Image 1 (spheres, rainbow, N blue to C red):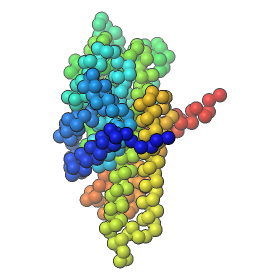
Image 2 (image 1 turned 60 degrees about the vertical axis):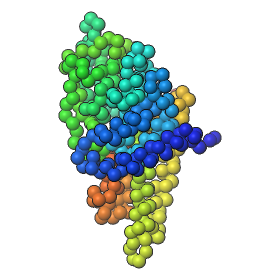
Image 3 (image 1 turned 120 degrees about the vertical axis):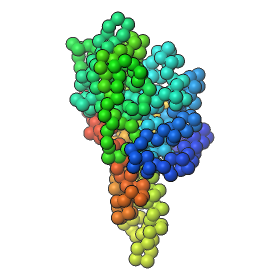
Length: 381
């Protein structure tokens, strides 16, 4: 078993790390405080190719794969989890299902713009009554001539207010069995009847755009049906496997940031005449962060590798997300504790890490859902 990155993956990771340190880290706190989407950063990341990492070259992407995407998201999230999730959703939740289920015409229309970053993508599944119970969709789509008329509302949609194209899900057979009556659609922001609603005021990832989407007699051309009719729920669940790798990468990145900042502070901060890193309780916290950082990284890269080679990875993605999100929250708690009173202020990034970490246990399937996914193969008859 080879745990080493390829030369290409290593170079991409180093590029992401260098950009994160020089371009993102100095301004991350400011964007968080203002709750402002980091457009200059996203545009520069687009120029570097980070929006088209899994898109084939014939559509303008670099096609470097999911392992390269994962290590890039780790490095970016190490300094700014908001930027990390923006890139993750674009690649994992919009580009990935379009590649897998889209028609050639759809790919030619959308992928070049998504690869260049000219367009940003989002994923519209969650509704007020369809969170963990994602099959309980209330949004409807009715065929009328050569169009679908869609009505409904989506909530907690990452990139909602900045996205140019969204994969949206709607019930297309009201009499059909729950879960087998949903279709997926490629929705453009300029379609008649589309609107962006309330922007959420969040505890963490405050520079990430999170908002409601409303569809009021929205007209969607029939050629924008993604995949097969009434197969939308299968598309949604398949897509979430990749999305969970993205969030596991984000959580691992937060953990990496906690470890780096805590180790640096433990060497500088003195109490009782010596650096606090000389005391065993601090050493234990640092050791646990280091151990769980490596475990999170390895679990995440395993899932990303399986995705790259086309092997089913639902359980592995769930393991990576559950473990890394839990470890990130633990690391953030310990980081604030190491910093003491200073960790409770906005003068140091661990306060932001502490707020950002929590969401990794909630979106792309709560920790409770990940337990179900992981245990399912062991409990089948």
